[in-house]
Length: 424
RNA sequence: GGAGGGGUGGCUGAGUGGUCGAAAGCACCGGUCUUGAAAACCGACGAGUCGCGAGGCUCCCAGGGUUCGAAUCCCUGCCCCUCCGCCA
Image (tube, rainbow, N blue to C red; front, side, top):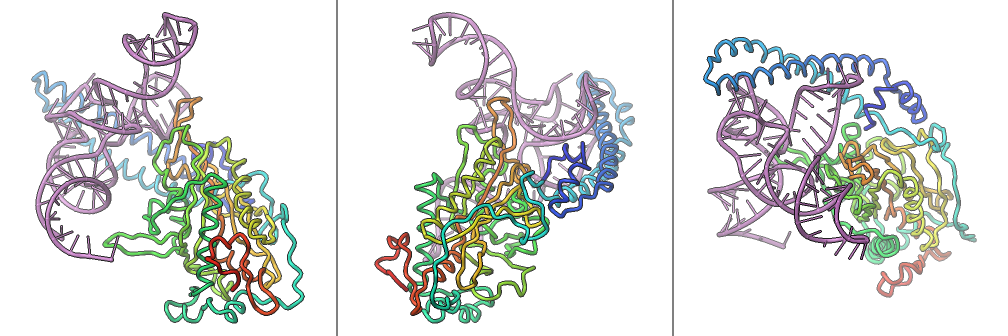
């Protein structure tokens, strides 16, 4: 959520910045509602003030043994007037809230202009794709010939967009998780977290998935309530600081967590239907940092490098791109994507996304720190990034480490986790 | 699943339906003292929001209700604790 004060003071400027993000902010509607709100709020608060004053008078009169009947008569209609004023204000406030909850974060000035992923800007490249003197297979074909990766059986068990892994394949999948967690905790200073895989509505509102993107989530009815399967560990981990005022000495807070992620992929029918690129259920090692605002931009760069470190250790060629405004997520002020080279597809594919959400989530979460300089609670900045997506990393390993005769060589960095297995 | 007890400021913890946004303690902050620190003492000290301002409004888990007036009474929900039962 944006700062309503800033929006109120200069709605045109806000609207202009949001153009970059392909979002049309309803300035006229907002101004109109804002004027109504102001009027209704002043009326309502004046009535409340009057009620409070009168009630105190009655209290005093009663204490000194006076007759309070005349006083009671005076306040007779006040209650109804107040109810009506509050009802009106509530309606207007709800409308305003609806608008504000649906407004995306403002993009940073450094975010490239553009409509789609085609307009993203490459920042740097690392590694050189291997020269494969044979026609490289994609991971689906490799999984089939090699065994261990089976989409058909998964479809029988559940449906499309699920995967079944067995044997060495499953082991390497697990090895990737362990490897990534170890790197992030022991080399980059993150604290490992185990979190719930189902969350409540408040948590999803806090990180911005609700109210706008409910159709992307799997819902789990529970009694007369509803839980949701997490679409990313960002949700439970970032919500650790919801409604908290953290001590300056505790910052930065750095968590990494491995979780499954569940996405309905509602808007993606027909996209990436082959293989493990886009699944309803996938594993991810996530990094989350909660920082004081002045450091969040440096943190974004550092976290991007924390994700890059994984690819470098696995010796997988990749590039870093800065997302353009049109491709930027709802809550992000700026995002770097890591795209890994996939020989089987002959292109770079997204494998990690690292974002600075600035105070956008913090405002929704009421996540604050006590600034020693002011002594006041102030909003934190939140960042998150994949470090990395496991399924897609497995795909990258399969395709980059394949041999002419269809074997997969286990990357050196994974050997300690493979229990003696050196190839698939 | 059954029976009880609770949810109050950063933390602990008082609170009779009426100057209670809330005692007290701790922590934090400022000061005195000190070469410096500690201790002691003094002072300040919840959050949000509206208003140009004076100042107002809201918040004692959440949502309803009773009342002129609710932290306090009633209902519902959520969460925590204790005991019993069941259980990976």
